[in-house]
Structures are given as C-alpha cells and as structure tokens.
Length: 584
Image (cartoon, rainbow, N blue to C red; front, side):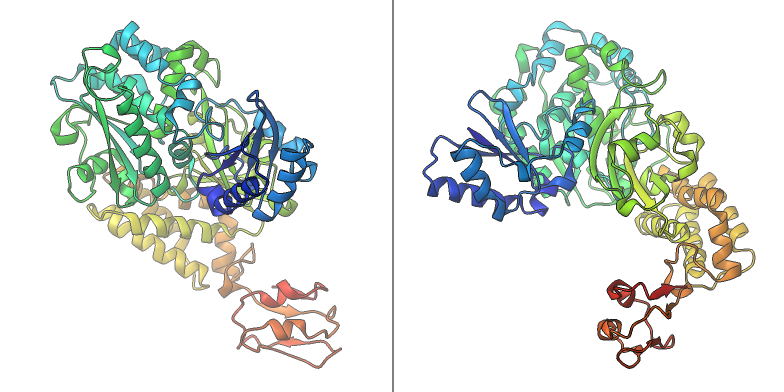
C-alpha cells in the first residue's frame, strides 16, 4: 500500500509535513513495512489540506482523506492500514469529489497525483512522449501548425496567439535564439503557476523543449520569483533528472539539436511580469520596460530573437502534441479555446485551483465549482486579472469567461486570479488596495505611471479616510484615463482598471463616502461607529474585550461606548453574544 500526502505550499502551510512525520512514526511503530509514504503537489482543493490519499497494491485509490492533522493519523493507520476499513470520518465529501471530477484537467492533469520530485512517475503518466514525438516525427513547422490548430492563447494575461509568437521567433534571422518562461507570478491572490511548478515541473520543461524545438532556440530560461523556494527546489530536481535521462543537453532524443534550460530567480518585482522588463532583469539590469517595436521575437534577450510565455501556456503544449490540436480546440469557445486554470480566493467557500473550459459563466465558476460565498453572504463582485484587471459586479455573473466577454466588462482574464468579494467589502477601499499595489510596483520610468498612480492613490486614501471632496470622482476619472493612455507599458496602462470599474459599477459607494460620510459596506474605520443597543444585558464581556477601555457600564445594565476613545477594532461586536452592538 502507499500513503500519498499533498505537499504543495498550501498543504505544508496546513501542517502536511507534521502529518507525514506522524504517519512515518506510526508505520514504524506498527512495523508496517509493506506501506510506503510519499508526497505529491496540490490537487487544487487547498481548503481541504492536508490531504492524504491511500492507494492499494493494485495502484487504485482506496480513499482520499482531508484535513488530516497529525492527531488524525493514528485512526487512519489503525482502521484503514491495519484493519482494512476506511475511516469515513475523514473521507472527502461527495460534493467535493464531484467538483474535482467535473473539471477538465489538462494543465493540472498530474498535480496532486504524481510525486513532482520523481521523473519516473511523470514518464509513467506519458511524460516526454510528446517531446519525443515532436523531435523525431514532426518538423518545427508542423509543431507550430498543431499549436495553431489548438487555438492556444497565452495564459499570462494578454491572450495573444501562442503559435504566432513562436512563428515570429522562428522566422527571425539568427542562429542564437532563446525561449523564456515567465514564472514571475505577482498578482495578489494568484497561485496557478506556483502550483504547477510545485506539483508537475516536468510538464513545464517538456513544453519548453517542444517550443524551443519549434522556434529553433538554443537555450531555455525559467524566470521565477525568489519567493517561491519550493517551486525552485522542485524545478532544480526536475532539471537534474531530465539531464540524467538525456532529455536536456546534447542531441536530445537523438535529434541534431542541443538544448538546455536554466533557472533565474527574480527579486519579486511585479513589473518584471512585462516581457521587456523581464528581459532587462535577465540581462542584469534594473527591471524596466523598453519601447516596442522591436518586439522580443525580433530583438529580445541580448538582442537575440526571444519567445516568452508563462507556465500555464507551456504546460498545455505536451498534451496538445500528444492528443492533437483539434482535441484541445474542442474545449472552450470559437475564439477562446481550451481550458483555463483559475485561482479562487477571497470570500469563497472552496478556495483553491480549478481548471474548467473557457466559456463557462462566472456564476458557475463561483457558485458551482467554488461552492458559493462564505457564511452564505451576498456576493458583491469578483476581481479578475489582479491589479491589472477590474471588478465585475454580481449582476454580470452570467458573463462567459472568455477573453472577449471579460474585456467588455472592463476587467481582463489575466493570469487567472479570481478574488471574490461579499457584501462587507468596500469597493472604494478595494480600488485603493490595488492601486497602492501598482503604485509601489511601478518602475518609475514614465511620468504617467510614477506620478499619476500616486495622485490617484492620494485621492482614494482621502476618500476612505472620510475627507473626500467635491470633484474627487471626476478628477479620479480624468487621471485614470490619462494614465491608461499615456503610460509606457502594460503595468501603467492597466493600473487604473480597478478604479475605473468600481466607478463604473459602484459609483454610489464613492458618493456615499464623499457626500454622506458613510461607508456602504461598513468597512472604512473613519466612516463608521459602534453603538450598544437596548439588547445589551450587561454581561460586561464587551468591556472586558475592549483594548482601550472605551466601554463603560454596570453589570446587568446597558453599556455605552465612548466614541472619542474607541479605536473601532470591532472586538466588542465580535464578542457580543446577544447582537447588541451595531456598526453605524
């Protein structure tokens, strides 16, 4: 038998390593020498970690246990591993099983199933067969044509046709060419690329091998943020094992072509997600965008033809070559083909990764796949595309998730992050949060981005602090449009999107902040107050919880809050068992 424990970042953060240690201790204690313990990456259901799968001698999954903390291990070992009875108490629910089974997993096909540190498991799952097929049975032009038939578009945000970029690099003159993976995933709430790197790094390497062959590259580079230490460690293992097998290096797969891949750890600058800034960073310069044209396909890394795609894009490639471009194109819509991985975060019940066909309605992703809103509150909006995207209100949740339809709302599909917001989310403060992020991440090269985002942020901070002025909304709109039109690169051009979409769909919240000095969501501290109603029974709990002694009153009598002392931390409302404290 085999015990597999999910050890992506989410699993480890939930205690998976301690769970593994406990299983190993118990197996040794019970002398269960025929049971092995192994690891895997994240299967996507991050909200259920740590996850423990038990496989029989025949390799068939017997049970999937969820939320397995160390103290749960003894019961599983005794009942399942020793007595052969499944411990039903910890088994994944039928609802969660359905959510997993209903997904169309291409990018995530191996994540949470194989050990990412053992190349033989990737090979057993059909790994590197696509690369062998491409290099020994297909010409570079045939590979590019297959990608064209698939309709695969770049999954990093812009949705540019992958085949076109590959073809442009192939047709560029020069013997020295480079293929680069942008693994500098910087959007708040996005972790799609990280999970692939941690759970199935060889799928990225195989995709880059095929892409490198198609465009005639001599070297591949993975630009990954240094804040992903586990991803980097597993990539290094995968690279080493691939070289040992002869999948990288001289004359790979017997073809007259030498190719290798190396890792470059980036310092976590969000602007380096822009391809020319990424190239500058690779060359040892400060990560700042360059004017285009020339495009990287003509003059990129060291002025040589260079192709850049993100992790998810490359992770689709081997599947497409193995199964055919037409099979990939069967998923999705006419203009947005295939599947897409989304990271569900925020006020959603089932946070984690899902892979669904393009074209699925937003409401289906959020309510069916994501399980709906935490505490069954009303959903207000979803932020798509990270700081470069925009807020889509709940009334537009019938919108299909395609590049074209999402763009019409003012947001973008982006790399696939979805941050779900409930009725208690202040949309003005949400815009302030994202603009603060892009303002800090601006490289400062152009005035519109460097100064424009700062001035917009100052206005948003003033509004959320209760000091909004007449004309602030109009000034925000004017600045947003100027920054969008005048900024040099994608960071500055898209930075105003969260502001423009919240102004478009939630203008009333801005007006309430400025003219009525109220926060509709009762979130901004400067615009709310706490009051104790006549429901108070004088239990004194709220007074004992208050960190600044702002609450006074006798036992069994109604208490009062001194607004001049209150710091609006909310601990009184959280502790009250009678619902006697209201936020005004």
